[in-house]
Length: 122
Image 1 (cartoon, rainbow, N blue to C red):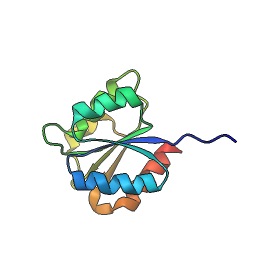
Image 2 (cartoon, one colour):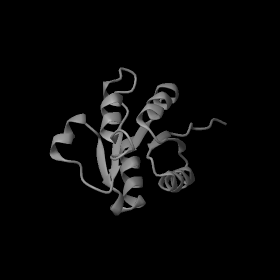
Image 3 (cartoon, rainbow, N blue to C red):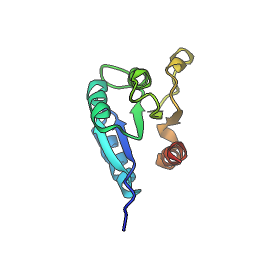
Image 4 (cartoon, rainbow, N blue to C red):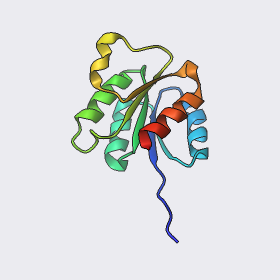
C-alpha cells in the first residue's frame, strides 16, 4: 500500500493566534503545515523544506509579505512555488510587482483561503 505524501504549506504571520488557527484548520484538511513569523525564518524554512505553497501576511513586524514573495520568486529553487498574500487590507497598486499568485483578504474568512490553496495546488 502506497501513501500519498502530504502537501506542505508554509504560513508566515506575526500574529501567533492567527497562525495557530490556520495551522489547526489546514492540518485538519490533511496538509503538513510549517510556520514562521519573519521573512528570514520563512526563507530558511522554505530553502530547507521546499513547501508546495507559501501563505504570507502582508504586514509583518519588520518586513512585508511582499518582500518574502519577491525573495521566493527570485530563488532558483523556489520560484515555481505559489505565493498567497493574506491581509486585512488590499495591497497598494505599486506593490503588485512581486508576482504573487493570489491575494486573500482576511475578512473573506478561512473558507476563501482554503479554496485558493486547493486551486493553486490542483
